[in-house]
Image (cartoon, rainbow, N blue to C red; front, top):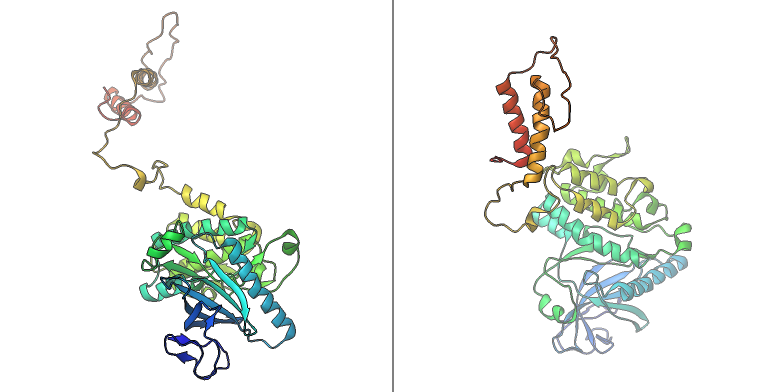
Length: 396
């Protein structure tokens, strides 16, 4: 099927292979190569269509964005046009990253502006949440580990996305990877892709210093962004709010106690979350900017540093599993040193003289009548236990 892109067309659906709309006569191929198939959605700035690129033998899918703002105000229309052009510029700069859609074309036709970008096949996180229910800690950690490097990349290019939310994060499906992997490196199944850079902002020094247009999605936008002063930490706030929404399946407005001015997302969890992850999320969604993470790298560092108490730094999944590992004996040098110290400790408890090195005098240490020493057998048992903690069992 071919879909007519004329906003006034009364019957936009046309048979395959049609060059001109049978209803209004509008040319159906954009730039003689991009054919719209069906509408995908509509926002404040325009419509989005699924399309195919007929200039390529495989006819791969792509996405056509048509600039069609709903506002009639001159100033708002000018701002909408600026943001639409801005999205094309951002995608051109950032779209080489495998987790950001690639810009394919940007042009005008029939007095309409169009943006053509890579089609990301898969479900967004809002759809996954509706289908599978609340995320557990493992899935939320994967979301963070997948997306924090993307935000770091975006921020390093001095860009603030300003609209991070579940609907703008897509989990890439397998079916489209065969052709993509030949032209794009780093593309894998299940990879999370950040889409919709229409609200993104170039974070130059002067731009950050002045109040700008209020852009973002209600509930996900950081407090400073709601005042038109978005910073890099604003994207981290939105990602943190996205995570608590995935954990609870509740709108962010319902997770914040306005009377107390605090988040209450922990009170409505259906699955337990570790204190370590909770602390990270709480810091991501802190209201004051100076109490929040300042960069994606800081969040990644805390996320990677978290290990269960008493376990080695290396994550268990990276340890090569072989036969059960027995404690390795300490070298004789350290064993004899520990024996010497334990002997001295034993003498202090029992009141017996400590073996002296040659040339040393044995100080007189009378036992105090107020503190009766423990029995020899009890002390020996305790000291052997201490020794085994250092040297492992069977350390004789």
